[in-house]
Amino acid sequence: MRYPVRLLLLAAALFLLSSRLTPAPAGNYQDYIVGERASGMGGAVTATAESVDAVFFNPAGLADVASSSISLSASLYGFQSTRIERFWHRDHDLEVSSFVTIPTTFGSVWKLSDRAAAAFAAFVPKRASANELIAFPEVEHFFKYSLDDQTLWIGPSLGWRFDEVFSLGISVFGVYRTYSNFQDFFYRWQSASQDMMYSNLSLLAVLGARYNLDEHWLLGLRFQTPNLNLQGSGDYLFKSVSWGQDELIRYSTYVEDADFFDRLPARFTTGVAYREEGIFTLGADISLNFPQKFNLFEGHGRDGVRRFWPIERRFTIDLNLGGEYFVAESYPVRLGFFTSRSSSPDPEPAKRTNPPRIDKYGLTASVGQETANTTINLGLNYVWGSGKALERHLQQDVVDVDYSAFYIFVSSSYLF
Image (cartoon, rainbow, N blue to C red; front, side, top):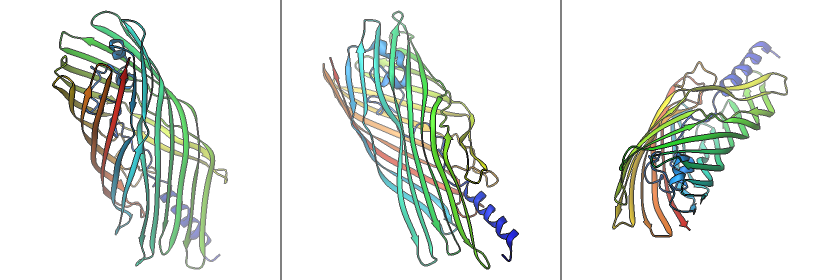
């Protein structure tokens, strides 16, 4: 080998550059709004949730359900679009648009007594999917990008009303996440790919309290514990081939059965609402998302070297605003707004892990019909956002990111 030291250094540099490029979990906690009534009101229901939505937003509200019910929210159908300038190369943007189906949300509430109710529900608060093949044949650059990310929350809840003004509740969720991200790129002088795939199971609790300040004003409090990791495993693969002056430079690392830790932070929400029963409701929530530092995965490659992927999450504040108005007493019209600010730090070329930082904002709307035994709602969520990311090519520049998503949903409940 004519230049052994130079070639080895180049191979190591290529690995270090590429190993920090995959957009890791982006640190947004409200990509869209789940629930039946909440999905129309922008999620601003911490003080007023009294149906299956209470399981997720504030289990204390279960104590005030009028009757037992079964709720079914048909799948969200929508489009997600992401554009990152100069992601692949100084002249090549990443543009990904995909049609996404978010699985059905199901829940059942059992009224145990005048003061208590129990429930069991499943929610999918995170779902992303993308597949794209991008070619620039005139300069012999070709890229492939694939992402599939889904989280399921499932578990029981209990709400108890102590007196006419104060209630407490608790939900316990098993959180199951599956994630896969595959990236391949081919330049005239270099070819590389990076793949990550894992699943994780964890446990968390949601504690809720509700206080009726007077006939119209309500206060809700929600505390979500950090999740407790039960099991997580997956694989990481990176490989590259580069053309040196005299020969090919090959490098690969494969971490098999690595330990993955999908951390969710502590989250505290305060909600206040004003309600004229059967006429209108206005609600506002503010959520504090606490910071975290952890390793997404830890493991040893086949070369015996320990690999890990450090993740940092910053303190963020999110806002939910919403209202509903009943037309002719039986037809609720709902509007809402919410934020989903990224907890990821600003991208810096000097850091090894650099997920995009995208601050998102959403608008929600729905119309429905309520009878003595049934409810039905049809609505939409529109989400947009912008932020910063590091370019894929050599990681020298911070570039702009644009994001948008549009979902429609149908939900219904049967009361008995």
